[in-house]
Length: 68
Image: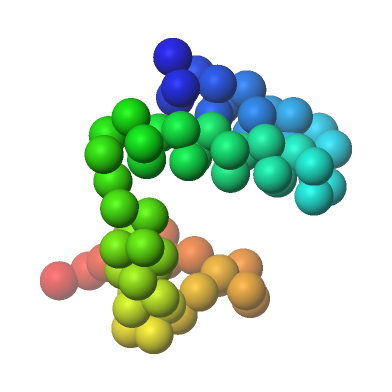
């Protein structure tokens, strides 16, 4: 149910990208974190570490595949 709601909120954000719609997505994400008993402080620490290691999406560059 929450995953479906997140997709709905994402669609609304894509149609009208603003702070209110983004806040709605974050609210659903908080609900998902609560439902799965996730520690948001830990999640944010992991996010920060990944940003340091891999960079972010500020330049809109996305890795599509890895060739080994």
